[in-house]
Length: 491
Image 1 (cartoon, rainbow, N blue to C red):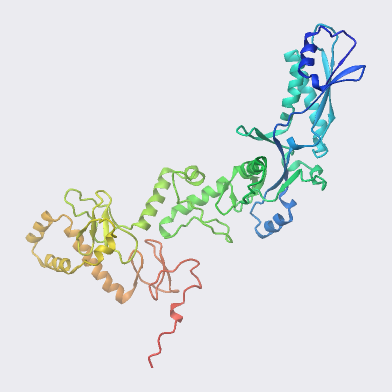
Image 2: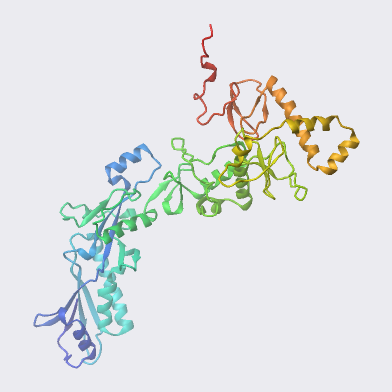
């Protein structure tokens, strides 16, 4: 790695004596010159070669089945385990026996056969240039040798470092422009490892060396910087790190997926189930936009405004806990809130709760319900619910004088709206029984004018059959045929 011209007497040259003391084991004297040869320090380094996605036949087959999916693969080699580590040779030219060398020459003495030949001359030129700069700035041959030994690998693109184990990873490629076929040799004796799909979740054998685990972690951590995707909406291509990856594994550009989410939010009230699905027709897997608003940075905080997020949260609440249609005012005189919601969205539930004071009431009998330890508040009340008393009270109120009604209003602030809604509810039930069908979820009245029996509630977004009133689910068409069912033979 280092040599000097022996013409001047260097027996008292401080620069040469320091260098000779530190690298004494690496000195080689052939009689005419003294050469210092030192292997490049590879210090638990792995090298990665990025491969085109079509290199692997299995990946190509899967790509054909799903043209928008990404199947990245790569090869890696543990450089520190190389049987023929790289070695450099430097010739220092001393013109003054008491001064540091004036110039130098660097050449590669040994280059590993499994390393890409493409980099050999480029690497040598880079080391020569950087070494000359070090010699000019530092003025000591030792600094040059130290640089070559420990920093020569900086020529290659560093992609990762693990300080805990002292591992590092470099790229032996210039992304997809790399064409050298050195790593395709069969006689690598296991030195080269091929990872066919970086994204594949595969557990490694516990006996595997930690550095091999590290090599796979590097691939999973950085592969999006190396591979391109095609947006299924606008068909533009870019590196995966610039895109949004859905849970199904498909990638979309920021503009397209952002617009898709914003447009879907506009009519979100017409849906009863998660309307956010992968836009690819053959996929349609949930995007999980609605889950964990605080942590889902890819969708919620990147594309949606506070108003849009609030609208989604309100829609979720409306689905899980619809607004009460009968008891719209909290009966508690100290509360009187109009934020009354049903305990759940089941058609048999009669319990409602106040969002302000959390008081629970039955909207049928108006009895206040309390949570009991170890019991379900809804099933516990269902056994004792009796609406006869309240129906009798409603009839008496309807036939009472205006003076008596006014006294009732002063005592019960909720009574006027409650009884009005109960009367409307009874009238609506009678009309629906004769002319239409009630939505199985929100009980909104729907009248069919023409067309098929598939109804879509404009209030809550529920899909149901107009013939039998049963809620139906995607894909809707061709999955429900109640009118074709044959009833019991009574003849």
